[in-house]
Image (tube, rainbow, N blue to C red; front, side, top):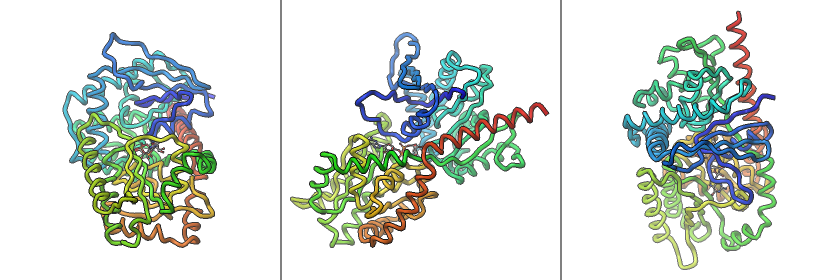
Length: 467
Ligand code: GDG
């Protein structure tokens, strides 16, 4: 079996006894590496301006973790700059929030070159390379220019908007256009895939007869949809044990018989937290019979707090939560419990299992693993209801959730009432379909399908060259 080399911006080396940090990519990559010999390369999370420090290597089980530090300029220009203030907003359809400058793009390209330099010393000829996410789009081009001919795949964890939006990225050919240097590019949904296909066609690529490969400047890139999953069986088992834990019992008691509605998201404008709280306010306004009978818990670990848009949004949520609690709260009832901290995975699974409904209402999301984790955590005899945004990639698979448009406050409020009052047989029927889907399309299947397609793509490409 070839070694699998995973490359992502941030590498999380598992520390015994430490909870896994929040973030969907890390959850997916850890699972993909579980059953194969592998190496995971990326940024350590540390910023260090000292003399060029060599990457550090740590061995854990069958995975070799190799991490490098970044300089302050790299961190500002590559990570905080181009990746998170240009690519992240535009790929989430928020051109209005993008802040472009040339030095950030230069820094982005420089760090991709730096990653390629480090990888050059680590790669073996039969390694299969799998690059993850928007920080590292130009990496294949950098590796090819250093003479590497290994199969290289790329997976985009976040949405891919229509071509017209991709063209708003200044000098788009240097970033999003560089995806054409991969053998295979995977997207979360068919919609994302089709958007990129249209972009390729508009940049002069020729679509192959199979409909999935495109030829451009003597290269061939294949594109496909590979919806990411979770470790469904494991997560369900965790939730079953978690309900009996001290943490979950104490938490449940604190609800004093009230129904629980839960939201779990990194603090990010794409997650639609402000719209969701507005929806909940409208629900309390229009459903007075539910006041004091429901508690909404929003778990929101802070993220990217160096970026101004994130602080602005954080202030908006704080104000709004304060105003809803002030308006509707009572001495013995807080309508919204808002916590900016991260909980261990078992605690979250326990919370999900006791929640009568989950609010997963992003304005845009590549997939959204929380939606799947909530479903996996439910008791099939008495399941809760998933309220899911039509703009989450997960909505394509979880179509028996209550699907909402987060821009419509009244619709969100109505969905909350419907969820809390839904008869048992309807809850069970909706849950059953979703649980079967996430059990079949779990994380192992995601990794296997992508990697099988990558090696097949490579084989047919090589055969094509020999002919
Ligand atoms: C990106 C894409 C795509 C959250 N809070 C805590 C915690 N989490 C965990 C959740 C979940 C993960 O973090 C978040 O994943 P999401 O998918 O919801 O969102 P992103 O971080 O934006 O992930 C996304 C994903 O990549 C995978 O491809 O689905 O669309 O944006 O697993 O449970 N985990 C713990 N404590 C917390 O407080 N332990």
